[in-house]
Image 1 (tube, helix red, strand yellow):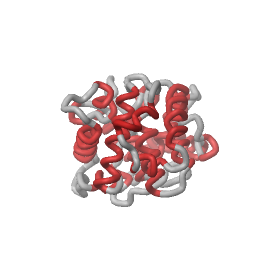
Image 2 (tube, one colour):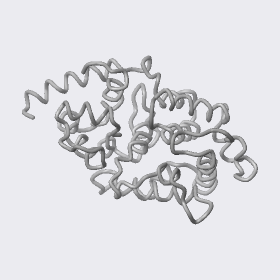
Image 3 (cartoon, rainbow, N blue to C red):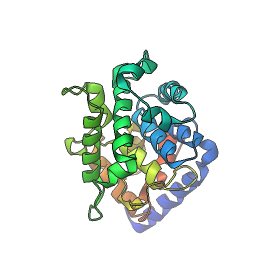
Length: 263
């Protein structure tokens, strides 16, 4: 793409970035984070909302309404007091696509261990983050594998738990984890910027079918299949337009696809 076309694309992307502000947030799993005001509850709401962020957006919102209805005004208090054997009853009958009620119960078992042992997801992630990383692939791989271990009660890991925290080294685009990191690292009307240790230009765009389709049309990727490699390629091309904060356009591009709007 030549310089003139890049400039034209940047103008269009900036237009849509400005158009999708706080007033346009719904329907999106990010809306649940904006119900909280403190670091720990926003961070917890983020990992929960992103974990369920796959499938039809209506289905996502319905599942998250059920889960956050259980957590109430203080998810951190719920997680710190959570006992798998006695409290998994709260999630009875709640399923979300590949997740069984037991997978969801074990997610909260793992989150209890994160917050009682490490204090926060931020602290756990930074244990695996190094400034010399080109992007966050290594960090995401270690973080996801650790979360899978923390959520596992038996030695065998269910298909649902494996799906919750995939490994980029196995080819996954890790859309949900990259989405969570966007919310935690970037800061604007939509994203919170709670995690200060990670530069915005290390993030990768969370690639789903909407992002993939539109970015193919915009010639931001030549990859055919959604993968970590596609996320790297799209992000690399967006860096030519916005070197410091390439992932800023994610929400706008995604919602153009969700709402079937023209670019």
